[in-house]
Amino acid sequence: MTVPDKVFASPDDAIFDLHDGASVAVGGFGLCGNPEALIRAVAASGRRNLTIVSNNCGNQGKGLAILLKNRQVRRVVCSFVGGNPDLEAQMLAGDVEVELNPQGTLAERLRAGGAGIEAFFTPTGAGTVVAEGKEVREIGGRACVLETAIRTDFALVRAAVGDRFGNLRFRRAGRNFNPLAAMAGRITIAEVDELVEPGRLDPDDVHLPGIFVQRVVHVPEHDDFIEYRTTRP
Image 1 (spheres, rainbow, N blue to C red):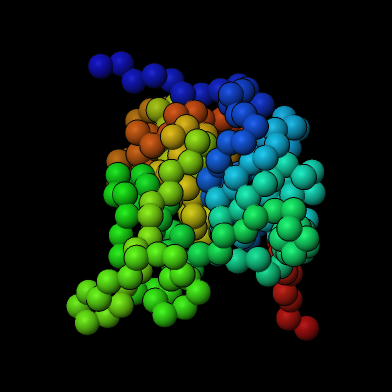
Image 2: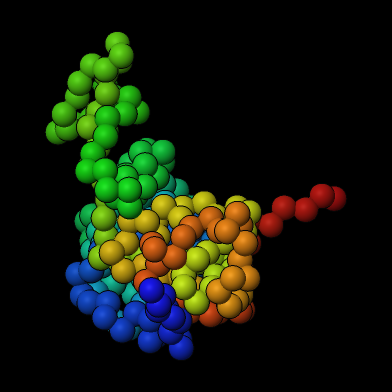
């Protein structure tokens, strides 16, 4: 069987079929591991009414906050708003709908979407506003909340190394939500710092197999913003 070459020439080419109203899972944690070039391509595309699934939808005006500033986002599914004044302001004004999830629940909902698991029970959030409107069962003597899987139209992720078949390796903390977001997307687009030929990545070094990735774009340079620079006197 011939495995297709999944490489696209540019981020703009890779998002050619992104449409208004699309749901998009995006990797990153704060500004760490953000698919910067793909986010800029989405901003330039002018696509609107997007649903973004992300841990915090950018920070300090950077990352996914660019899309908020452009008023391209209709709904955000996330676990954290603090540090993102753009999301906070639009949420309080009623311009953007925000669904808050416990962080571990959000991670598992994305993973479940990629694993073909439609829903799962978790004790996280039982007895709180998180459980409102959801089925609650007692399992193992604990109240557990039914959470549904997340599947999105697209996923945008960043990896340190990728090959032409879409096999990916992430770098340290940059791994964060990236593999989970990639699993959840029906069309997953990975921007990679380094593009290598098939066979260069040892199978034991592959963090995410190419079966979850439909498109790859090589982006060797990034801004890699530091959120809070801390130095010793």
